[in-house]
Image (cartoon, rainbow, N blue to C red; front, side):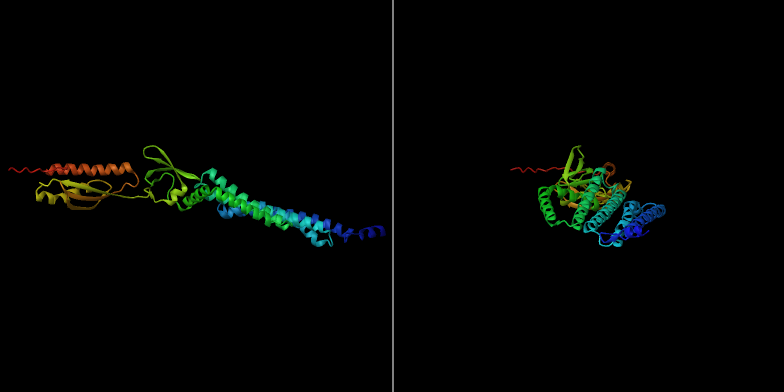
Length: 349
């Protein structure tokens, strides 16, 4: 019995053998408790996920399994406080392993939540390739920060490394200035939404339908069939006309009547033109005026609005119907349209 007591009181590295045995038992008990707590957390999170059923809260809860390994590490961390006078190398290993585990879990959790939230809210706006590139970029940035944090906490001097990365980043940014500008403007287009795929736009004399918004450029299908590729920088820098949101289009028509037309017929022209517009569906009158005495005609200015949105075919059909109505009405009243002409007077000697 005395031999056992003496053995238990033997001091190794500032702690008795009994201290090590008690510590081992406590460690086993703590690991069992941590495993139990981890399972309970899983069950609670599962219930909460069913309650929220979607949204950011559900995405955050989905990532909890990436944090629970931290619970398994806590018992090892407590060992350093129970035992006295442990060798510095042991303290250093336990603390370094703790930093690595906690950082690893936090980065995995943050990356997972960012990916889930991004997929939920950007999946319809971005192409799969672009969304994948964004997720990859976010992962790389998070892991670089995590590695620098770990190296700093375990004693490495990271100032030189950060300075080198800064110089390298500046060199890459200068070399890829145009590309980075186009990528930045891609996100400007994405969030500001000056236009969307399928919109009818015009920029710098080029008009057509937007087919694709890429990371570097936007593809437009011109009305004559050719494909036009314009950089995203130019798409945001120039004056862009987007016709997609039009509800009505303004049409101004100049109608020339012959100079020989009688005054009573001229006075009927405004009312005739109003009736011609009123008889067409989706067309509303703006104004009708006897505008000018032109060189070879008396000009009436007809302004009306066509409700056709960006549908050019429907717009032209309604304009065409108004024109036919004008021709029919003028023919019925025997009012002649003017055409460029000159009258020559010959003088006799």
